[in-house]
Amino acid sequence: MSNTQIICSILPAYNPAPAPGFSNADYAPGNQVPYGYPQAPGTYQAPGVADAGYYGFQVQAASPVPPGFAAPPIQNQPIMKEGAIWMPVPPAFPNCPPGLEYLTQIDQILIHQQIELLEILTGFETKNKYEIKNTLGQRVYFAEEDTDCCTRNCCGPSRPFTLRITDNLGHEVITLQRPLRCSSCCFPCCLQELEVQAPPGTPVGYVVQNWHPCLPKFTIQDEKRMDILKIAGPCVVCSCCEDINFEVKSVDETCAVGRISKQWTGFLKEAVTDADNFGITFPMDLDVKIKAVMIGACFLIDFMFFEHAADKKQRAGVWQ
Image 1: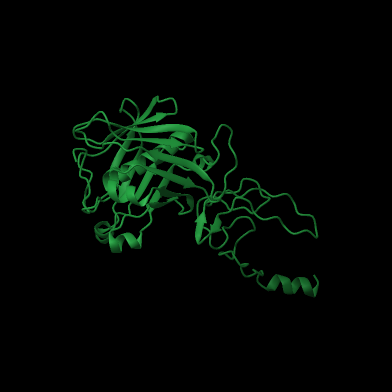
Image 2: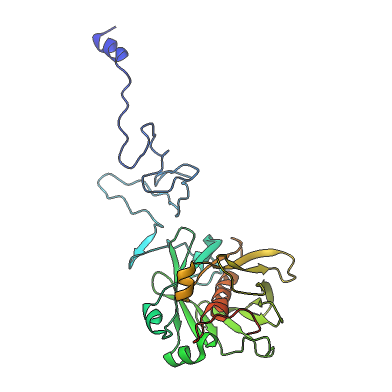
């Protein structure tokens, strides 16, 4: 045995320090999640390795890079724009209205209404603006009310409106139109209705209020006015320290399909502003057009029951 072999047999095995971005000294390339990504079940694999895990975005396999050429950027990464992190642009799907591809990849969304300082200080009703996010906090859409000053301040929560929903490129992908209607159960012939268009100018569904003496009830219809789902809310749509749930059910109301929840935001925010947070859940495989109509239903519910009137009071039910 040579002197070199004797020395190697005596010395302990050399374990290099973990490379930057890896948290475990016993790592093997391709078996650790890089620093900064959530530790989720499964194996993180770098571009070019098959069966890459899902950590907020899909990692697409990249072609081998010839020597001397720069590596191409990883596709489908979250997009940073104007201080907000946007959901990665998904691939196009057949028979899917442009801009609704995002909805094919999610079964839950969060809607956060932005707080308007001018409205808090003066009581002057401003345009409602909303962020629509996925469960990772990535912005999927941005919604903004399109109404004039007179309509907002004279008609209050019952005002007709057009709500324009745009994607991360600023393209309008969904348009919501609400005509001027009555919202009280005392006038059953002229109840609330909302039309959902995707893309703008092409109706994909409707939200129609159903008459009921006590409960807020709605029907979700497709573009042919066929009933698809039902929505039923509680008798009293105001509560303290808890969420208010509107259940989404099958047409015969025997099977639960999803939920629209108005989330409790705390005493201060609830008392000072009418900026609300909502959560919507639906099946992953639900038609994206119906998902878009459910988003429209959430906005209609917000305006009907949680938008403060000029006297700063909130509706408590369908009889008001």
